[in-house]
Length: 361
Ligand code: NAD
Image (tube, rainbow, N blue to C red; front, side, top):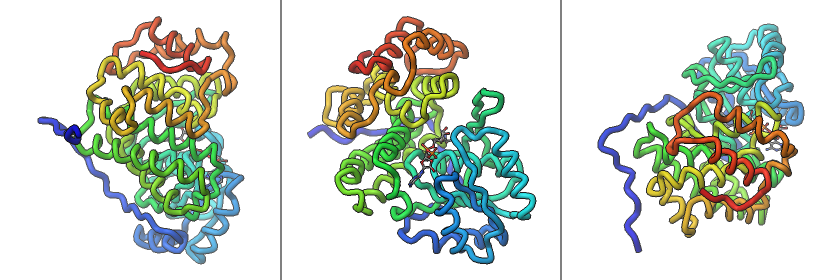
């Protein structure tokens, strides 16, 4: 048996963040404790419209600490929704924010924190991992911009398997692949460190163990909890180190063609990893070992297929005549990638991802 990989680097930087992270069934009863720990007295509860009932249940647990509810979060944090939530926040005279939901609700919470400086407590109900990052993507006039700012990092995260287990299976799979993408790209990040790499491999391992079990038995709370553990690890990696080709492509495809966020990550991931594996096979070898496949890309593709994840951009609604524009946008602003990118490489990758072909370098 080969020795376990070493992630040691002779030179690196690790930047920790003061955040309280709890894994606890029945977490709603703990939210009041976290609000009080942050000196909060008037919490504004945030959700999507779909999850308004979860927000109401949370507010009921908060009792007198709940100052109001805004159930209007939507994907990609549009500025006009944040404006409307700001008005509710002001009326409620809120002094802290509590989000229960996926990346969309957490995005709204972060946008409000950026504008007001209020502390945030988040209860994630998908696997996307946004809760563990100081990153915020927002849209205005049809353009999505991303910023990194310590003020948007939540102060407390509560993971509760009882609150995520209502996630439809397809959404569980695609949001998990979104999280796995953070960890996979983290393994070859220029600014990776030994701890981020350890977290990345363990995060993906947790999902490889948890997802088939969640799909086989959605009542299996331990499997959901292990998936949440994976989401936290993978999200923490995203919050620590820079991303590359995969995240850039998903950003372009989501922003310009309005493709669904998590599903786009699911489709692109094996293709982006296959492309970069040609340049840094050693850095991705721990993933190939985890999957027991010749390459990390093959392992990721097989895993995604075994879970019934979407496999083609065509299936997500991208038209073939939009591929040229996607390629153009992906090359527009240069960014660091372990493999220098040229138009032919990108075109090949996008075409394979569009058609749902096997990933190749
Ligand atoms: P989402 O938050 O958009 O949720 C999708 C739908 O599922 C919503 O209608 C939501 O109400 C519903 N839902 C969520 N949890 C549920 C549950 N347990 N049961 C039933 N329904 C549930 O999906 P997402 O993939 O978590 O988030 C995507 C957004 O997150 C994108 O805007 C993306 O850019 C952002 N994101 C940001 C970061 C970051 O670090 N800034 C990281 C990952 C994703």
